Length: 409
Image 1 (cartoon, rainbow, N blue to C red):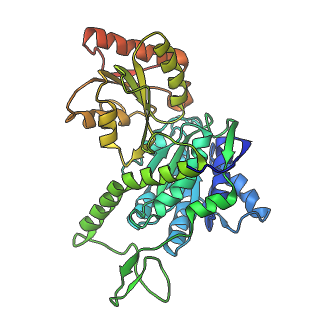
Image 2 (cartoon, rainbow, N blue to C red):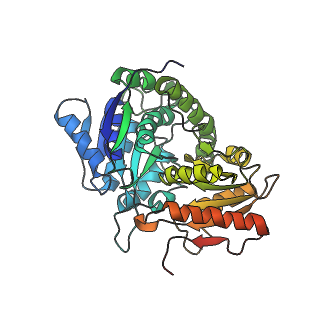
Image 3 (tube, rainbow, N blue to C red):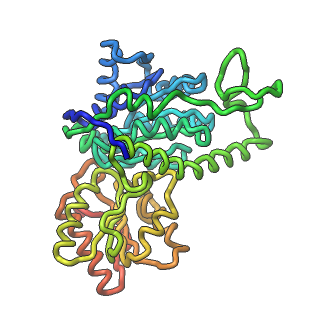
């Protein structure tokens, strides 16, 4: 491992994302402002204004148009980026499916924020969880450093010829987007060398010629045509295969980046913390993991075998890795910062119970829905979850499989 020398800058999560995009030699950025994402595109617009980047910055009239502009830019071969949050992501909903279906490797940062109504500008994961079946790779950052690192990796992942799927990187609104942290920044030339130029797989056009997969007058092809029952099913299957291949590519890119930057987040898919011999454990996404690690350390000092599994990549879902990581755990608390109304528990809970159904061992699995609308998940509440898991371990019984924690009711 040859780790390059890096400078340390004090940055918010939004600023860290903007800086990563600045270094990634992006051709087109199209965006519309929405709290708590706005700082990303504001900061990047300063880079454009100051001549620090050679990027076409498009101010559009809505988020729907922002992603449409990025999709069309990617289709002609450009490296494209956008950012949004909450209702902005919801307004993009139609074009998210179009982007993944057209195999356009757009990268998008999402400053996770609750969906209305009532109107709320603070963090939960309801916005991106809605899009978990849209065909986008989803990465969730624990801190601003990881947000910076993940954006750079996202371009390599999205543009990989065996993947060609868009990637969204989630960072918790305000908890990360507006909080100042020390962020280690790679040299510009290192990022440029790591990403390289976008490569295009060859496809056969209507003349029978092998041509690069991009819209170009000299080699005409059609992207996103009318596709009825004669071919639609096969194309959706191709997207699923690309998503399956993405797991190994994400781990590969993550490992190569670690060799340059010196930072690793588990294997790129999941990060385990004191999980090897853990009897009780929680599972979470995003910034909450930092507080959970502190609680785990204290419990360990008292002889309690506690652990944490942080899901970094929620799509593709790392089924094998999660199953192996939980093989010794007897009681699992799944923490959801989103609610699946009318369903049985939150979206992450659904996935984990589904994974463990066919696992060799079946730990108790309990859902803790928390932090909706930005409510803080305190050290005290996390301790409460682990105490509950200890009781389940002692009694071998779960009284309430789905719980709302930190709530007046």
